[in-house]
Length: 340
Image 1: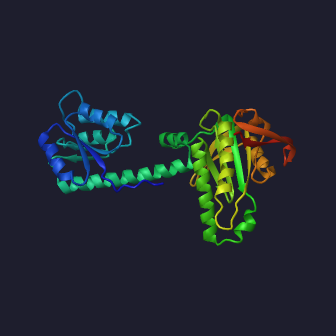
Image 2: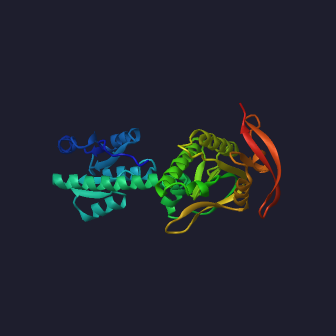
């Protein structure tokens, strides 16, 4: 869910002049939650203890060992704080000082004496930009794992990675074509949205991630971020999906699914350049898909490689024999259930 910004945004004003701080409080105190500091050291202490600070107004010439440029450099070097926009508010009006401030990561540079309306307008502009960046980040977190986002922000690219052991889940809805023909387009979209939103919540609860959906198909994985017990997590999520569908039928619609899980080696990468898709590739991904196609309705089936990674004290495991998987030959599959 995209966050709401109805509450007051928190600003930190840093200036050694009490008069200047009083002026800023009078100017901004009604519209913003304003925190003040009289030197760079105190400013950094406040930033470290207040992760909710949205913007910093920073003087340059201040007493003590840290001037404003050094404070800005310190803020921008810390990944936890580097996203906070810094507006220099200073009596230094030389173009070289302004250039240095912007090079150090300052978002804007205002010289004293300043026009109150100009300061308010520039604060508003930076906060709107920050809000859009936060919305974009939230959307990316829905689409991509955190480590992928971090690498994209750092280098603008994501290097494909070989993962030696990942558990992959595929699920699809039984009888989807027939059921969808009985629903209006809006009803169909609403139903898929409801079901897949619940699946996403189940995945997050079990430390798994959705990879993609294709029509009524749903693909997820665990182990891409080197999670421990990824097979247990993935199987538990699959069983919870089945339980959700058993208890959530709406009206006359009784949704059922097939689920297949396989554990093995995959390659993760971003496919495309403009509308990119984070995806997993490899033969073990294909096997997981084939297992799902062979699974009985409302059953979770897994391969021997997944069984070998499961906690037998947590799950009941029953062989359902060898199944001929397209392009893979006969493979022994196992049905999984939760133990009481």
